[in-house]
Length: 126
Image 1 (tube, one colour):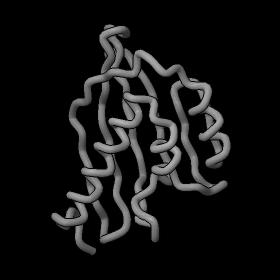
Image 2 (cartoon, rainbow, N blue to C red):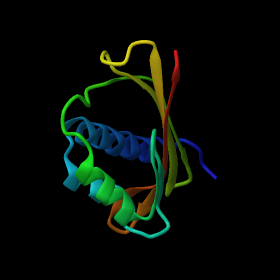
Image 3 (tube, helix red, strand yellow):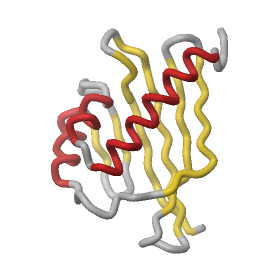
Image 4 (cartoon, rainbow, N blue to C red):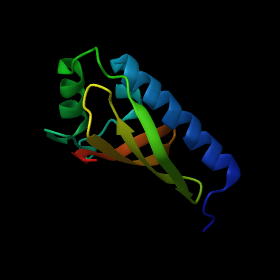
């Protein structure tokens, strides 16, 4: 198995950046597109446990649409073969000093493109 094939890594890095831009802009359509449309998709958030794409979609529709600006740090994207990747990053908000967020996503290549199959977001004291 090839780890971090440059072409695959470039693809996942680009889709990760697209996801981040959609998150900050609260572009629900793009966020929905980038999560795997499946009852098996999981997203564990800061204050919610979401099982299935319908629950994730419902959460996105209720999420506040302002104040999502954040800074990323120590982002690591690793690909495993041509169809699987893990993205991990730390994030911070000026509005929440002294706290650091952690985000991990499992990306898989589907016929219609890269999709998040599992995600975990948490916040801890810096």
